[in-house]
Image 1 (cartoon, rainbow, N blue to C red):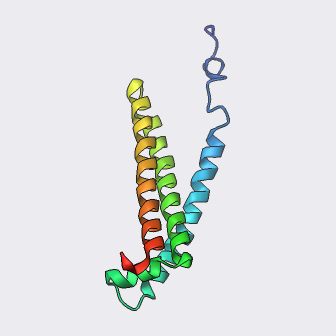
Image 2: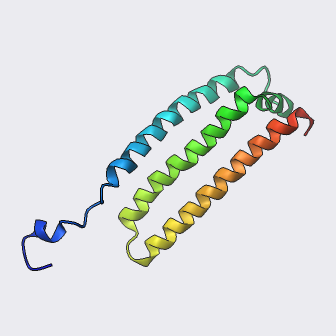
Image 3: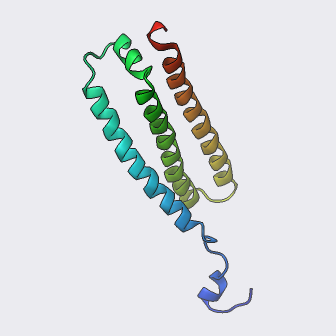
Length: 128
């Protein structure tokens, strides 16, 4: 680029219009988390008991399993968005790329384990 002004050297090296998209997804997932966590706390508070059998019966209902799976997916995606920003801001050079790959791996594996666990309980019911 030349030896122009500071703004001239920076032009074209910005966020490539991805910042607004990322910011919007963080706000949407935060709102979804708020609604789903309120649902979760209200649902758990209404349970007659807190033993494993009662929770299995509750989670075997589609009215509980579907929002619970959405909660797990939304929480993991929201966490990934926030940690991605932290990694991009503070981990420079090659280490940042490795950390982003690990972050994506941990996010996908964690969400898959959570959803699988919910589905296993939902489909086997209280007999498991």
